[in-house]
Length: 429
Image 1 (tube, rainbow, N blue to C red):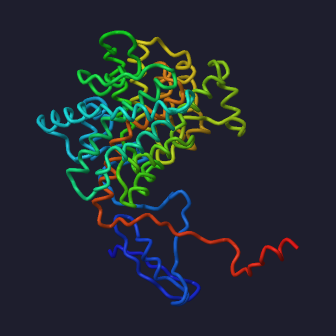
Image 2 (cartoon, rainbow, N blue to C red):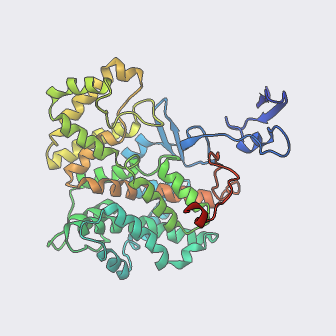
Image 3 (cartoon, rainbow, N blue to C red):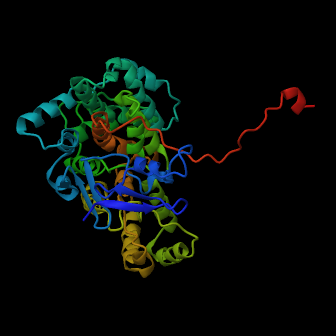
């Protein structure tokens, strides 16, 4: 069977044979379909890229209908249970799981690059007392390109490697300092004796104690959340990293673009919206009325449904289990009971089942973050720290992909044409 698509242009009667590769056709192949040689060829119109592939990638596989998420072929369930965040970061960046020697060297590199230049501290002190931590993170990550001007030499593999190490290592430091800044507390320097998640918790919460000792259950839950957020295919922020990175800019600037995309409420702010919804519901007794409000278009069910997943988000199942460990330490968030009952009713209601609306990663993550005493504005910072290895893996894949060109989408022009300019003195007369 020929893997091709036969297209008949009813305007001209001409037929075209377009090759099909990996379930796709090349948009450029549609350019041959035209009325005459003087006109541009056919293009596709796809706002939001709902059915357009912008790249080939071997990093993350998602089957939304079956609820499957894999990093480099490994199921997210196995990685969350058996691995740790830095090993997953190595897997995403390098494409394979590390040997013992490779893992030890990787952890050592990242651990000893967690410190930032003292001028970064001065830079962050310059923000207003009430600056949003996500805005601080975006600005400080972008500023790193000025501290490492050699980062623009992206054609050098060794140089790319050290910038990737620096970025993964310094994200928790910058995120924690943004958190402390909002509280008016002194910044805490990294502790190289602690693991990645433990060190982040230390920089967030250490006060006068000589050594901060985080609860291992909290550190494990945070590490798991970082793994679940590490990559998620060509989402808005990853697309931003790739689009900006296609100009061959340094990785710090590209990642800053990803943070900017994640800052938006439609991308990174969903778990905060879930908490607001649960508070508004208030108790289990109010859930039936809320459900009716959703069906009547008067309420929105936050944390359910996903652009990709038409099944239970596999990350949501893992986070639901992580809740138990966290609440064992912090005490149960009173909103958990509301969330569990809301999930139970929604999963049994024909209205939601028919629309294939299942809990996504944001439905339970906000409950954990709140239990750890993070303000809502920090939720996306935590998301960004976990997503950094994915952004960098995607950036690395982009700069080595010979098919990639600088991003330059087509547009459909809908404005006026060939107007005659009228000088100001005539227009104003």
